[in-house]
Length: 317
Image (tube, rainbow, N blue to C red; front, side, top):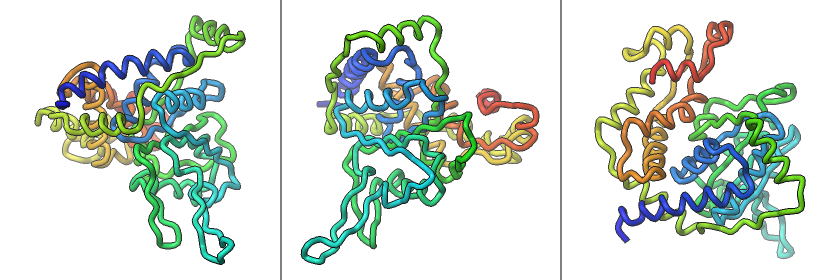
């Protein structure tokens, strides 16, 4: 099949995916779009929201309709790297044998990722970047496709370990979940307190997902759109030639080149979802906040004046 045919097929399958997910998840359309954009761009997502907003259910549902293996890791202060990656044991022949940990799955839910110390958080770094882990000098590849979808609670900061910038940068998107609207909450309560239980059907499988990721990466993009994306990222860097006065005043560190790569990839997926064959500047703008908000480090003045990361990014859009 040609790339155009595959893109048309992707657009149709995407609508079916959304319809299947909406059997279980009420509202949160924009959030689901952002998670799926990161999936089909081959990236990872960090979901930030208060407890009870169905973050775990949402990720579980998405994994089911994508037809992928799913593992949940509950991050706690006493979690060790070997609890995630796996460890070597002596078998009956007195040979070392590697027992794979839960990180070896297609979709990993890293629940409350900031509740575990940096040593354990960093166990995910290699897996997220290289799609492989090294144990005792031996490299083990992950099954493709591979995605880490992590959650974080923004209010209970006692006993948490903020994610290092290097790890935050591995996430393509930072997605903030809000409370549902009044009407949506009524629908949620009706759906979850009755007898009816919807059975989810997988819409895709791993080979189709890998094909769509490949086709989206091959999508052509105009030079002026790439320049717009790179220009946007370079404007977040304070005291650079392109930085505005607002950025230099409120930002201590801007986004790196990985943000430019993620902006272009996410804009390609956003275009494909909307039936386009090439992304434009509007597609870049549509994904800019989620790609940049966790990569722009505010300074003490921004904190003191309560300037949000969204305000900072909107100032350069």
